[in-house]
Length: 257
Image (cartoon, rainbow, N blue to C red; front, side, top):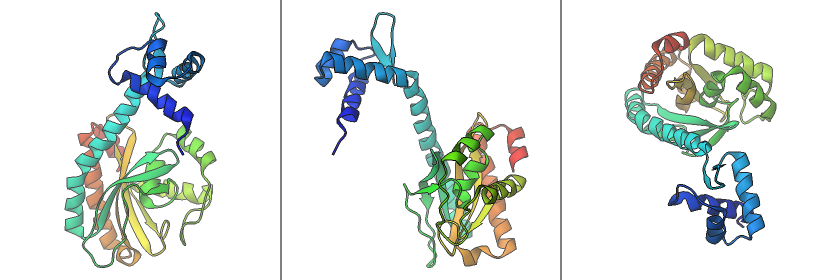
């Protein structure tokens, strides 16, 4: 069942689909809300940053929408930008390649290039995983600002998904340390038992980590050190190239990878 408050809030936002500014009367006409309810909800949206109020008491969309729109566009851009590289990596090395972005305490898989190998690890687009488990989610956490890392730690509910899932802050920090020492991370049996992943971060023009890319496959294929290093070298080069295309500075990349 739809939440009525949320529905009415969205109806208020919809007023601005074809208006730059709207009065309280416009909002009442569009939503059918009583005056007191319309005013209360509009003012709440102002407080949250979704709307702004002008000096002549008109409402308009807030800057938060600009930020959200930028994030959506950025994530769509990285998806389109990354897919040809992912398909080349898949075709060259025979392993599946995934692309993820952060959403709160989770990572969300937004693109994939599936392998044609008979034995493989299947990942569904839209799948969520905690930032502390698995190479690709953890590579995002590893390069977040210290303050954000600390805030996330307080929110993590460490859960054992597979045989080697990190289940404590100490275990997580050790893996973060290893990641930042070499610029990529490797996981075995952290999200699914007998599966492995190798991941690198991708940065934007502000130096922020905006995505992670990983090879993923059966653990047995990620045991040979030479093969793993070859995968890491190839993925690092793609991570650098995508970061450059997003405007990341060379000095940053030299310090990361």
